[in-house]
Length: 450
Ligand SMILES: Cc1ncc(COP(=O)(O)O)c(C=O)c1O
Image 1: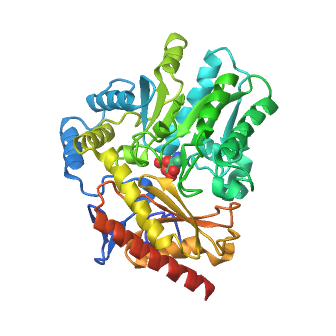
Image 2: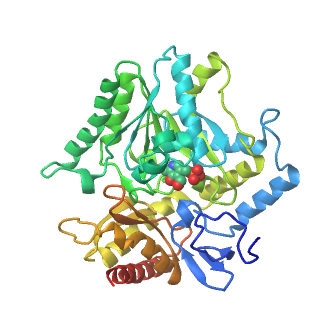
Image 3: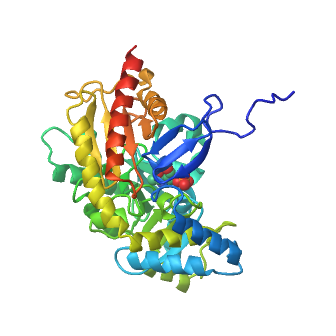
C-alpha cells in the first residue's frame, strides 16, 4: 500500500520535512508559504552571486539554444575551453590544465586518481598512500570520504573505506595550539606531523597530501596559521609527495582571493574547486593540475585513466564562464575582501562579548563562530543539547539560512556555525544577518537548556 501524502523524493532526512523553496532572488529564498529567508550561507557556500542573476541565466539559456551537451569523448566545447583558459590564467604560479566534473566529490576523486597516475608514470608505483587531515571534509564518494576526517562518518562507513590513508592533526589554533606555543611554533608542529607520517610510511610510499586551504563544514572556516602551508609545500617537495588543496568550499573568491591559496603564498600541485564555480546555477566542479604535471602524462601514457559522462558539460561550463565574467565586470573578488572585513566587524560587535561564542574566525565572506558553554575553558555544550541542530531550525524560523555543524571538538561534541553570504549582499543585509543569527543563537541555547 502507498501513502498518498508521502513525498516520493528520497530526502536527506526521512523524518524532518523541509519547506518547499519556490522563488529565489538576490540574497533571499522564498518558500511556498511565502516565508522569506536571508540566504547567509548560500546553502553550503554555493550561491555566491545570489539568486536569479540575469547574466548567468542568459548565458545558460544561450548555451542551451546552441548546444546543451556533446560528449567529451568526441568533442570539446567553447565554454569548456574558454573557462579553462580563464581559470588557468587566474590561478597562481603559471599555467594549469582544468578537468571539469559535476561537483566537489568528483573533483577530489579525480585529484586522488590523477596523483596516483602521476606517481606511477614517474616510475614510482610503490607510492600507494594518501595523507590527509583529521576534521576535514572532501566529499561523500568513497575515495573522498576515505581522505575526509569527519569522525562521525567512521562508525558507519569506516569498514568500507580505502585502507591506505593516514590522517594528521589539523592546523586549528583555537583548539590545538599548546599553552605557551606561538602561532609560528604551532604551525611548524602541525606541518611536522606530515613529515613524520611520510617518514613512518617509508621512502616512496606517500602519493599525495590533501587538505582544505581553509577548513569549511567540519570546523567552521578555519584558516591555517601563517607559514603552515609554506612548510607543507617544502615537506611535499622534499619527499616527492604531491600537494592537493581542496578549495571546493573556500575557493572561487569566497575568502577574498579567487583561489584561497593565493593568500598563503604557495602553489599546490592540484587544486579542486566546485560550488561557487558556477554559483549554483549548474552543477560544476573542476580539478586544476599544474601544466608541468599534465605534461608528464602527455609525454607518458597520453591519457588520464578516468572519466564521467558529464565531464566538461557545455551548459555547466557556460554557467561557470558567466560567473567569471561577472567577477571581472563587477570587480567582485575585491568586494568580497572589503565586505568580509565589514561582516567580521559586525560579528565582533554582536558576538565579541557573547558568553557562548568562544571564537570568531574566517576569511572574506567565509566566517565561522564557535559556540561554547564556557568561554574561559572553551568547554562545549553537551552533544545531547543538539545546539547546531536547534540553531539551524531556529534560524529558519527567523528567516535565516546559516550552516551550523556539530563535532568541532572531538567529532561529537562542539558546535559551530558557518556563514557564507552571497558576494552581492548589501551592507544593510549584513545587519539583518547578525540580528537574526544573534536571536536564533540565544533561542537555540535557551531551548536546549529548557
Ligand atoms: C571542502 C569540500 N570538499 C568537497 C566537498 C564535496 O562537494 P560535493 O558536495 O559537491 O560533492 C565539499 C562539500 O561540501 C566541501 O566542502
